[in-house]
Length: 402
Ligand SMILES: Cc1ncc(COP(=O)(O)O)c(C=O)c1O
View 1 (cartoon, protein in one colour):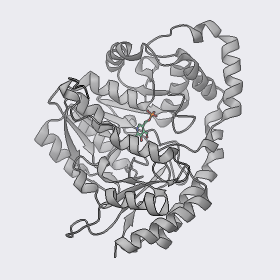
View 2 (cartoon, protein in one colour):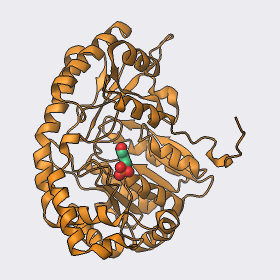
View 3 (spheres, rainbow, N blue to C red):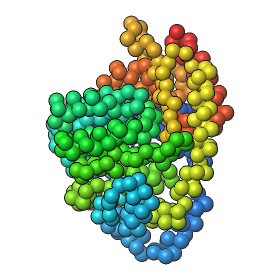
View 4 (cartoon, rainbow, N blue to C red):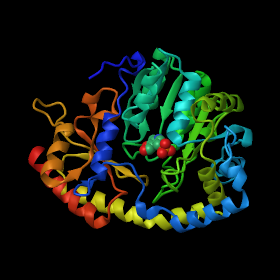
């Protein structure tokens, strides 16, 4: 094959882990607990059809013509009114840019701040795409320790002092991959540290609306007095990921910088899908929609947790989340010789029992740390399928882990 001289900074950028997840999801013979997708049954198809018709009738030229890089104004306004301000975040429309999904929001944030060699802190484990976003820029990634409540503040502060990082990336609510939620006190402290150490915090919160029990927590951004916190939101998990719409709130100078960068990337996000989200929010449909999908997700989550309790080996640790799409399992035996490796187990699981999941390793900076872990998604299968798949997986794990 011809030897291509791709840019050297891409040497460590690989989409293999995500490709593996997707190939498992599209094989109908496999019960996949691998993806991070909302349920097909959750999409508000009838409302979207009707809204598309209305917005194209009302504003055909505005929507089919080029739009503004900072986003479709009705969506920026509706995001502010319906999502940002109710969370206790002080902002106006100048503080908002819409993006083509939360992933682009993080990509723009890092491009705005991170030079090659700059240190970026992230909680360990974390959303695996973020490693590639950072490696692409030549960032130096440093992992911060976590416990069952998320980022450990002692380790964070120690690493801030040691590495003088430019940025912290954090997923505070129903974290991907662990399903854990950061308590209010830690959120407040992170906002304080952002000011004390002039640290940019990218707060990625795409799952916060998907709460099935307990009280909503204020975002880190609501405690921000330094203007160093960027709050990233997405409509992927609440309306649809295929429409590729997200939004973020930050100080105006940050929004301006991101707007310049976004112009080089895609000029602007798709007008039609931004208009769908704007109208959906303006009609006040989002809270009712979330209310209507909550019982389905809760039933799926409970089916998975009940199955884990019943069929998985007894000496495991797992997250009992209050929302989101995932639970996270830690098997024993990481330190033993001939230890477990979920990257090997997943192959056996797919081949023998037709059950897929994501091994823990790709979520860690040091893949060896995740050898005994697996991420399980509960949103994409019926409770019956989840129960049967978790039983088969539990039986297999019990043979391997004693
Ligand atoms: C933490 C986190 N951020 C961002 C995303 C991607 O969201 P979007 O579809 O808005 O790009 C995901 C998707 O899995 C995620 O888990």
